[in-house]
Length: 413
Image (tube, rainbow, N blue to C red; front, side):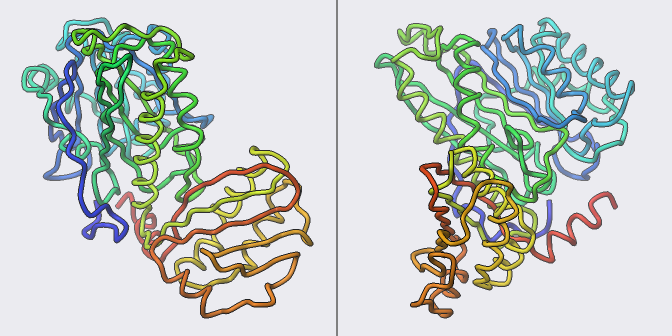
């Protein structure tokens, strides 16, 4: 956690209510960081439905492998997360660390090891000494409390400058349900499904298969539409749990994702996922600007997204934003290299409401001053119309500053 909080940080943090069915505790195990919490334990006193999406990296961490193996079981009783060490590229030692953690958590909670979920974030390639925290899980299970979301969010941070929290309410069949979520992430973020780590819990009663469908569909326009630096982590994990506590209030269990009663819940979940994803972008390492890049008129939505990500991931576009330079030629470059269909002579580009280019050339009414004024804002909307079809997509990214280089140049020291 660097000394200064991102200038794009939220001015206030949401207050997350306690949710029936889930309790949390944190501890300081000294894995990498001194004088701060680095282990989180979530406990579900009754079996909760579990859903998850994970990195598409071909070099996934040991905890990602562990979660994937347990997910078909669909039930969770405990989640253990550590920061400071990713337990990735750690071979047999990594698998031994997850096995020890799962064994210790299962013993503490009194559940099967297939009801435990694990996540780790931090340096890749360093063996994780799980004995540092496996011994405290008993105590954490006893101390865990429902009103602990903000502390939970703090315990999973690495280079984050602020904790990321969000909450929403919805209704299922007239019964009020609540969704709480936390996330961490600031660098190595171009999730190919989710951000580094995010844990979302609802008190709703929803079966695992329906929950999985909701989550899998919800990530694409949210976590999968944000990028800090085009690097997909080994450890990306986004999990959604449903404790089922609102059954006590008369909520009838939902078994299928296409159930009409899920409309309000789906909207609230997607809104919460977008909120968390944008908080991650706004904490991009060294970030001073957030860019919202909308592509219209592409051959398809998939093509539009690929073009938008080509723009969002361009170091030249991102450094121009950092320097408040309305260099729209870099947008043209990024569109052209995306590999998707584009017609130079139909292209139009806007910074905010200022159209800077149209029909393949600079707008006749172009004003450098007006375009620069848009670039001076903290939030910069960029729109590109390809002029070929109906495909649209929006992605979010941040600028690339000297501070990003500084943070990542000495991350391990």
